[in-house]
Image 1 (cartoon, rainbow, N blue to C red):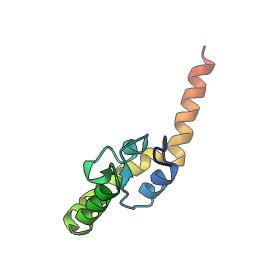
Image 2: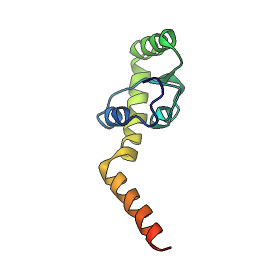
Image 3: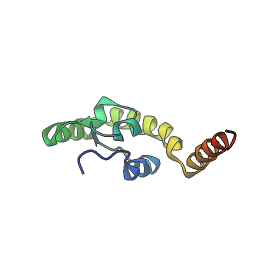
Amino acid sequence: MLEEHFGMAVAEMVRAGCIVFVPRGGGVPEIVGHREELLYTDAPEAVQRIARVMGDQRLQRELRRYLEARGPLFSPERFAQELLRVVEEELRY
């Protein structure tokens, strides 16, 4: 699938501490916070992005910290809290 709307597998990899590279289409860029280093349009650009990150340990550390901070956005606890919030809000009407 070229344009997955959300990307549960990507969110799970982010939560697991992986550096992920995602296509620009669909909803997956939101998971990585639209970080340019992690986005690609086609296979040659994906190879370029991956090679750049693999060759730069400082950038790897920076991206890991950045993605680690985003991980809680996709936790089961956060999902449950948001779902409960939406249900409670709808029940008020």
